[in-house]
Image 1 (cartoon, rainbow, N blue to C red):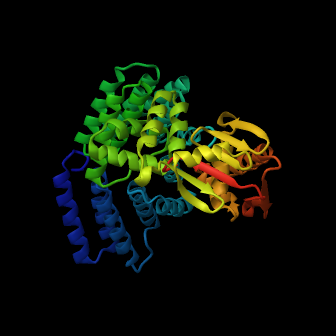
Image 2 (image 1 turned 60 degrees about the vertical axis):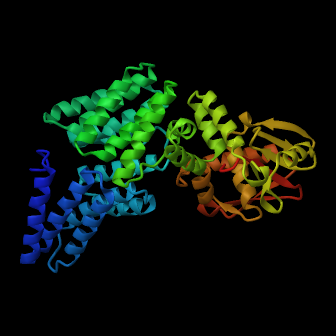
Image 3 (image 1 turned 90 degrees about the vertical axis):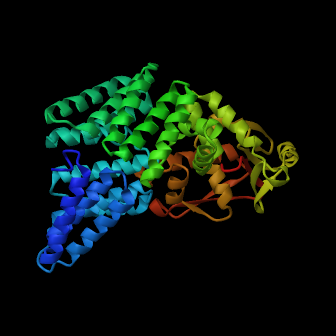
Amino acid sequence: LASERGEPHAATSHRERARAHAEQTGDGEGLAQAVRRLGTLEARAGRPRRAAGAYRAALAALARVTKLRDVSLETALVANLATMESWLGNHEEAARLYRVALERRRDRPIERLNTLAALALLGAMRGERVPGGFFGPLVAEAERVGDPRLRAELAVYRVEELAAEGRLADGERALSVAYTALAELGGVEVVLEAMADVGEALLRARRGERECHAIFERCIDALASAGARYHAARSAREAAMAACWLGDDARVVSFVERAMRLSLEGGFDLGHPPRHVGALVPTALLGSTDSQWRATGLLERAGTLRVSAWLRDEGRSDLATRWAEHRARSVGPGGVALVAFGPNGPRALTGAELDALRADRSIVLLDRVLRRLHRPGAAPRERGRMRLVEPLLAHLAAARPRATSVEQLARAVWRQRPSRSVQVAITTSIARLRRLLGPSLEVRTSGSGERRAYAIDGSAPLWVVEMPGA
């Protein structure tokens, strides 16, 4: 009750007394409950590392109970710990724990849906994509189970998803679902109300309304004041993306730096899905020294060419050009600014050596700087016809002569798990790659189904040239 009244110090005091009493009386389940609530308080305050420690301690206390344990409490603790692991950037462990919780919640529809929503958020955080989006089916299921709080939260995430895709009419409908659910709750829901308002501001930004920035500022302040630092940081990142859509790079930097400060204070990792790279590029170019360093490090994980492609998809070709020029100027020791994968493995490459490769008509060259594919006896093919084929060929070339499995390609090129739709996309892209390479090189297939793997074979020298970090 003290926590819900906004009295964190009193809440901590009460919970510490509860824990002490449970320890004195040997009440293992009571101790687990008390420690879990301490963990929840730490999570609300945006301290995921301390919260994770509390949840682990609660699970340990529960494991010492000799009688039949409360399975629902144990499952809730597993899910709580999974959330903290995701906040800390330990995504594989978070996904494993969520799947454990999901298996135990098959007969509890609301808790099951909560876990599915958490897995969807984790997938979005990792940059994965599913046809139609993660949250549409979950909102529909929340309507069926009749939980307004869960319906509001899922609808808000759906609004973010739709705003990123530019689907404004669908976004407005999802926002209406969120506000209707909030009205049903009838109480003060600081976090949910602010999240819904952030969704509305995102839709306004997509319509070109610069007044949305005031809404973002108000929501971030409200969340930070309520101690919800994780959600405040997340909202600041969404605000930065909206400012990028509007071409307001100064605001982009301001919002990203605020998100970074909140993340550092709380010790959590927001994750950086592809749609947020546009917010990082202006920060890497224009931010403070510290934020430039952090943003550049995150962008280098994605690679220069992926970043440029995402920026162009968002209509920010100007930013893509500036970023490519910036990376080209980031020359390393000895004047080397390019990386090449050749017949003898990776190596640094000077501009003069690249010119010589481009002039050589006896090799296969994937030039990821000019975005062209050179083949013996054929005119260069522009990247526009190679969308998914370009990163696919680059990955196979880097692995050559080893074969690359379907799962490795799904994660490295498609950034997803090897679902049926991704396997179809891989098969289609491999067929297109074979047509592009013609007789120059062969794409060899081994195995079948999920064990299928591909390797580049043939006598023609194969080179891939790209920018550093690509």
